Image (cartoon, rainbow, N blue to C red; front, side):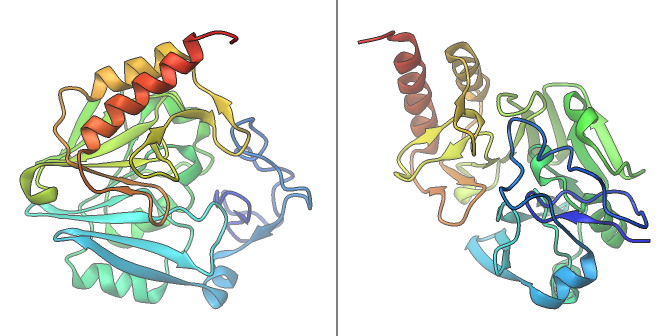
Length: 271
């Protein structure tokens, strides 16, 4: 029996003697099945060939990313607060070094994940560190490996620790969330956005899609609603899902201007 992990998206499935016939996440239009077909690994095999690399972005904020790249290649973040550490988003690899580093930094008080593509082995992380997992209830259908540590919330916001608030924006997934860290950026605020708000190649811009690999857009009204939802929140910096995708200054203005430009282009009609 093994918990098989999809090598295309990193989703971990319940223990079984044989791999699943298909990956629920890859079969959805927001992801894709590789041309080579669905393939699988297991935690032991993943750990044998990979390791997590760490980086500090600012005081109290570190990221971790699996090397060589695995599946979607997102990064996770460790947010350090006086009330405990938050793991934002998740990785398929939980190796001995990562466990030792996190325990040395005080363990985890909470786990929160932006959307189902990054649920991966969240239950293993929760059991290792004795931490609850905070997910929005709108995405409950995408939980393929249920775990008692999961705490589903239905409100538009959830303060999971003092100064660390999960905000539902929807868009990419109905329950898509971002994490607001009030103490970040020297008290000016930080937004950890996963790819609910995607940092563009020009990091002075962000974008919003229903499907990123398949380049399927969101409606203008949805993008405007996302921007309105973020208006009350102060944040000077924004850190996205992928390495180097950081908005280092005026992040709130970048989001507002990008959303307006995106919506205006959709509404402009054919030239």
